[in-house]
Image 1 (tube, helix red, strand yellow):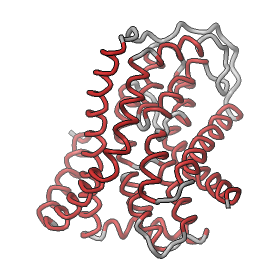
Image 2 (cartoon, rainbow, N blue to C red; image 1 turned 90 degrees about the vertical axis):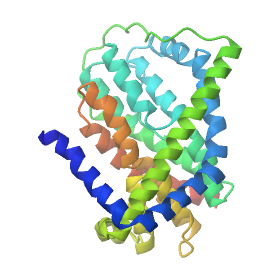
Image 3 (spheres, rainbow, N blue to C red; image 1 turned 90 degrees about the horizontal axis):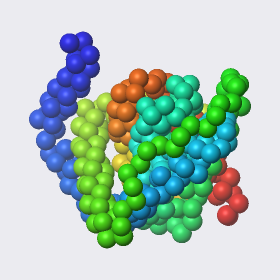
Image 4 (cartoon, rainbow, N blue to C red; image 1 turned 135 degrees about the vertical axis):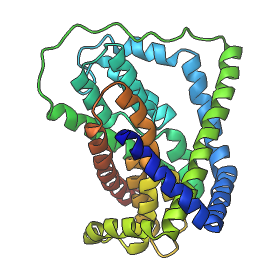
Length: 328
């Protein structure tokens, strides 16, 4: 009963907020739906179809077979752990975390190795950084900067996890994961189209929902409290109050935060892109709630996962600043 209260109380509070702030939530839902129709659907749907088509055509099984032949070839982890990293880069949040859990459940990595993989294998997909972010910000280099800074930060985390891990004796490579056989072209494309529709609808539903959550929290001043809590430490690094307000929205939901950053007229483009790198690196609690489902189901600890996302945000900002300086 106590555990269920963890779900009941926030649900009851949100239901009360929906009633108290009906007009604000309705306006936010319309704003979120407009963002989905104008930017997210045309940007994400083709990428979702392409990644699903590649997976249906046998990419996942081929990658698993390739990397499972190596001994500790991927940051000191079994070679098969490269599969979640690559699938996450293709499919985005939370595919990487779910794939790590699948490896652990299949016995292809130990509990410690799965925890290390969760530290850096759950990442944002190329579709968001290459298509959605440039559509919101408008700069021609924005997508490349965010993608390179995001993946660069993930690789640094992988190197850190290898450097600070306890050394263990290498073991024989495990058998590759068992994936469904590759589909013929027509079936692979048909399934990919259905998967693209489902994934795009899921992302849009999540965005609209968290637009409503943000509106309710803003109207009740709870979002302002979160913004002030972020502003106190971030102000030491020159982060302005408007940026911290947008970052607070990004803590809840990534797309909402990036959209809020793109709408700021008082901040420089470089500052907004660096803040977007932090938002994309962290992922937002909307993503974390989706990732926690397979993590807890596999009885893995989420501590390294959350530590990795916090560090990913910090390293993402550093890489973004470096890339913007180089491209200046």
